[in-house]
Length: 186
Image 1: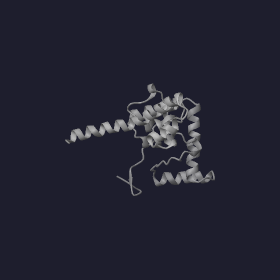
Image 2 (image 1 turned 135 degrees about the horizontal axis):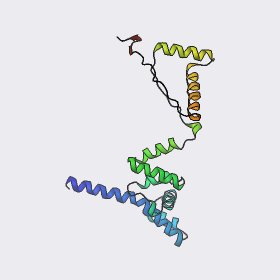
Image 3 (image 1 turned 90 degrees about the horizontal axis):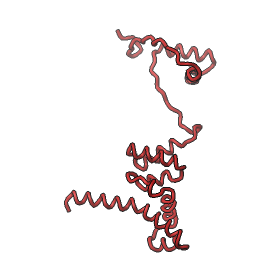
Image 4 (image 1 turned 90 degrees about the vertical axis):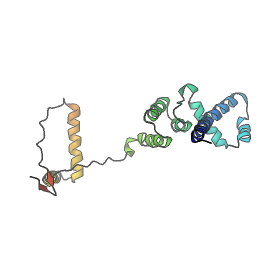
């Protein structure tokens, strides 16, 4: 079999495999409307577990045909099926736009839906001169704070001023002389 034919066959198999979740789900939803023992029959016909079949039906029930994204897999849809419609559409739009895999979508949802109190702290790195750091440490000590706590409190105070007052015109900060290993460069 030539490579082009082999690749085409793989693409067809992928489409069939990905579509099967929708097909099973829609088949079970139809069965729900017409046959009382649909899961018993479905398990016998497919050898799939009850839970697997329930999952297919549940995801298909969350997304009518008009809401299904052709460019995203059934598994992408399954990742957002438990969210409200607006959030489902938002996450699926982003996954389509940025070409996220199902795993990337899952990771981003997990990070994005974490309550603010559970969000991981951000690390910010600021390179400053030894003189500036010493001055900041003295200011922090005067307030009875460690340097990091003092920096956070000063930034919070500054942010609250910026949010309640019109934006002030700032003079540019004086340029620091470049340094290497703590000594000024000439």
